[in-house]
Amino acid sequence: MKKYVSLLILALLLNGCDDGDLTVDTINFEDIQTSAKCPNSSTDETAPTLIYKLKTQEALILQLPANSIKNDATPDGDPLIYDINNSTYRVLYRAYDGKVAVDNICGTIPPRTPNVTEEWQATAGIIEITSSQVTGDKSQTDGSTRITGYNHQIVFRNITFLKPAGPQTEEEFVFGNYTTSPDPLYLTFTTPALQCTDKKQVYNFNPTSFMQVNNLDQTLIKQVVGTRSAAITAAANNINYTTFKSNTGTLTSSYFCITPAPSAPAISTVWNSVADNKGIVEVTTTATGTTSIVYKHTITIKNVTLKKGNSSFYLADNFVLGTITDPPVTAPTAKK
Image 1 (tube, rainbow, N blue to C red):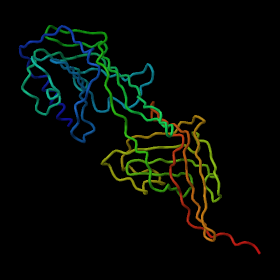
Image 2 (cartoon, rainbow, N blue to C red):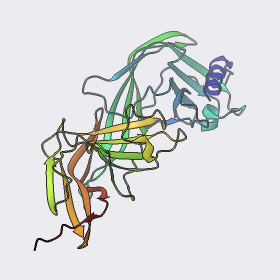
Image 3 (tube, rainbow, N blue to C red):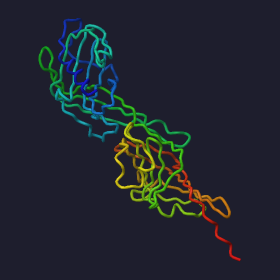
């Protein structure tokens, strides 16, 4: 895919311009509010990203290396900045003599028509990207929030275009907004929770992610019926939620309770609890049986916010991690 994208850009740059209907003095895409990305048909995560905006007979194309746009909010006043070098970071404008379509930009074999009437290549300047998190409405059921996407406002500063009439520099050129989908979360755990033998971690997992309580307060899980709770802090009872990349291995119980952690499957995202004096870990212990007693410990995570970089979401008012079932124990014999 990376090779294909490079060849596609090269073809865009080298293809000669034909005489046609549209000539351009200035580039104006202000009425095109959003942009789109050419799909990546391969699993090559290093393939360049092509983002484009289309008008009826015009195209504005931005090429970036993979992962140049992050699924994370940028700090206030501190956008991502990249230098335009006409190699790995490219900006290209084209005018056509007919209606331009996505296949003219992203097609493996671009159509022969419409023809290009004018082409501008950016030779200098910077790409400035300001990203913000988009959060959905708070759940009326459990109080949770989820990230629904990211907005990336892209601006070119001091950009110089090499155009047929000569170079032209613009102090500020607004490319516009580009949106990305959030990193997927898999927050359903249907199996029993588990505890490491050192009693310091409890966890649950599914095929693509896990959630773990680290440095667990040792007074929470014990064979005494009742409910106990402890605060989530930076040092104790802190929560970690980790997702994994697809096609990098299978997550099983053998992944846990060992140091260092296995390299496969490959980690995609890591979210950690915020120590805000609101979150708690609660354990409710029940017992069944008379002569042979089975203790069950249900772990509930309450009022916790999970954070990755500058992004965050509220897990839920009450999130049940799972239930640990102890082996049966013999009830003590009553004294006569």
